[in-house]
Length: 348
Image (cartoon, rainbow, N blue to C red; front, side):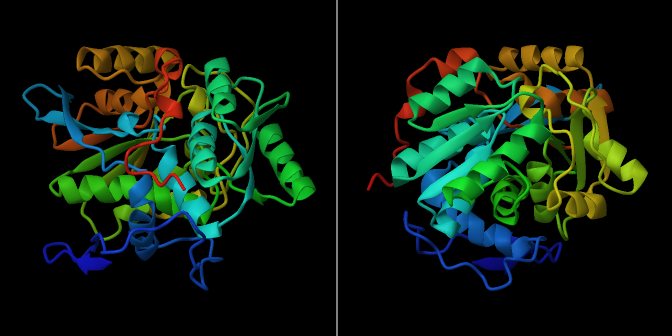
């Protein structure tokens, strides 16, 4: 259900009375359009409500002298440990597939594996050579099959497409899909509903699904959207500068979830048309941000600290939000919580 904010004229998602069940959902006839819109975010919010948390905004550090404290969107508190469950749930519930293949750095695979176990879906997750062993183990512990490939994200995605064709399965990419982008956009919708006076939202940027989703949520809102990329993989900054998507070689960064080599065809035009800035941060800045988060009681993985690193680098004196996108640290992954259903989840 949607409404209009009388102050901004922007679309606001309001929860409806019905909750989405585990079965397939009828897809809108025009959903083949690779650019989802604000209405798709509202549909996603209602659809995925039984499977995700509306995460809180926590108080963080000030990013400038005498400035207000930064707010932290606590996506590390999601039952699957990251925001990825939003896009994964929206795609799975809409498509109604019983066999799914994906390529993942880890968190998308964990989110899909948790959903697959709940909904009785057979899942194969393709992992690139640099995937974190603890994340691969968590995916397997949730009952999914994993396949490893050499090379980087490009090779991973190529293998996932081939496996989906061989298995007659549905391919659900980690970011490059309109349903995934719409699901990730519910992060931005919640931020703007809970803190409508936000001036800037800092978003960690890998494949671009979360950044594109926040851009959609910001449609009609007077808010700056800033993507933050690891300095080793600035694929969106390079692509926007070139005026077209460009592919970077495989690289390494402590932010293992943000190693994508090329912008996705779905996120790229959304980001191109709406993002206000892109910031690159180095590994030392990312690790320092993660350490600062721990001082605030937040155990974020490096990828989850990237947005904070960008906000600290920007140093603006304003009301701002940084998305803490994930908390799947090795310590948390060895905990039993990932294999336990969230109280809201359907189990039949």
